[in-house]
Amino acid sequence: MSMARPAGEREIIARIRRAAGNSDDLVVGIGDDCAVYRTYPGRVSLITTDTMVEGVHFDLAWHPPLELGRKAAAVNISDIAAMGGLPRFALLSLAVSPATGSQWLDAFMAGFQAVLAEHDVVLIGGDTVQSGHESVFSITLIGEMAEGELVTRKGAQAGDVVLVSGFLGEAAAGLALCRLGQGQDIAWQSLVAAHLDPVPQVALGRVLAASGMVNAMQDLSDGLATDLAHICAESGVGAVVAAEKIPLSPALCRAAETCDHSALDWALSGGEDYHLLFTAGEQQVVPLCNLVREKTGRELFVVGYIVADGGVFLEEAGRRREISYRGYEHFR
Image (cartoon, rainbow, N blue to C red):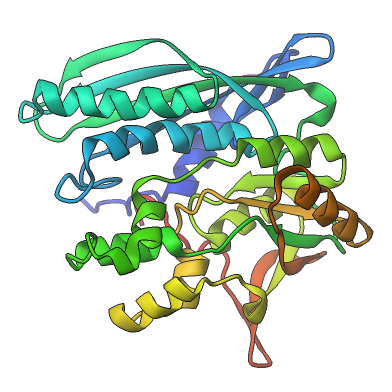
C-alpha cells in the first residue's frame, strides 16, 4: 500500500479552516494572528494560542529557563500586537519533562510572569502534566480593542507600500551563533538576545491601529517571505520586495561573514523577529512615519509595494524572483 505524502503546514491549516464553524459574533476566524469576536457593541476580544516544543522551538543547551519563559510569553503577546490589540489575560499549559527540576521551572515562571507584568497581563489558568520526553508549553493570550481600530491580514491593496518596524534576520543569526557555540560572545549580544528574548511590539501596534492609516498587518514570526505571502493571500494581492531596502544591522552582516551565510537570506526566511509587517497607502507613509516617530521614537522601513497579481517577488540586481513562503514552515 502506498503512503500519501505528509501534508504541509499550510495544507493542514486549510483543511482545518474548511471544517471550522461560524458565528454571528465572530469577526475574524482561522487565518489571522488572532481569532476575533464581539463582546459588546464597538468592542472585540482577541484570542490566540501557540505551542513551543523542545527540540523544535527551543534548545535547552543554550536557552536558559528565565529567557525561555520570557520568550513563551512574548511571542504570544506579539500576536495581539499584530492586530493592534491590548493584551489582557493569559493561560499556560505545561508538559514538563522528567529531567526538569523545580529550580528550572521557577526560573521559567519568573521570566514568563515578568513579561506578562510588563504588559499588564494577568495569568488566569492553564494545565500542568508530565511529559514522557521533551517539554512542551502551550500559551493562550486574550486581548481586547475597539472594533473600528482592528487591523487584519486582509485589506492590503495594489499600490500600498510595505513597511517593517525593525532590522530583520537578527533572531535567525542569533540562533545560528548559538548552534556554533558562540552564544556567550559579547560581540553577538544583540543578535543572541533577539533569538532568546524577543520583544513584542504592543505599543507600536496600538499606534498603528489607532492611526487609521494601516490597511493590513501581522507580526514577523516565520520570515518576511512567508509572512508577507500570508498578507497577500488573505488580501488577494501580490508584493514586490526590494533587496536593497531590507533593513540589515551591522551586527547581522558581521555574523553572516562569521557563519558563512547570507544576511539577506536570514532576513527573508529566518523568522522569529517579531517586528510588525504592514501596508499603507503611498500618501500615508510620511505622516505615518512621523506619527510613529513622535509617539514611540521608532523608525519604520519601507521594503516594497503591493501589486495586483499574486505572489511575493524579490527584486535584486535588476532581476526578479519569487520568494513566496520561503520562510519557516512546520512539516516541510
